[in-house]
Length: 115
Image 1: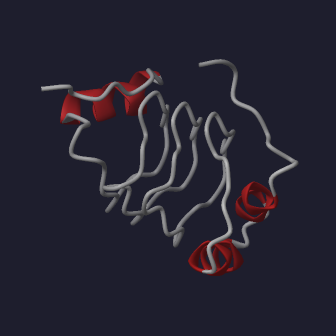
Image 2: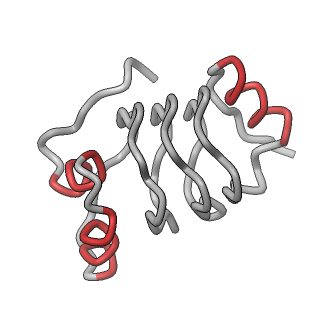
């Protein structure tokens, strides 16, 4: 877990950064792989992103727009959502409401419940 990084060498990451959510979703449906671990999504509008089975460990979502995204099968362990817009967002069941709230308000990294 280090500083968030802009993965300019990953074309799918750059699609998200540039707001090309539909193209990102299409490429993923075609089987194109991407590495989003530790990615920097500060201030990015990700509404409409299909997040199923994405590895978003240690990603940084400060003030990102995550409204309506279904993260239930994504890996968000160690991610931070400080001041993000999360109305209608589904989170993985391994994340407690307290973990989500702490990350939203204080920017803590979210830890999965291991029980």
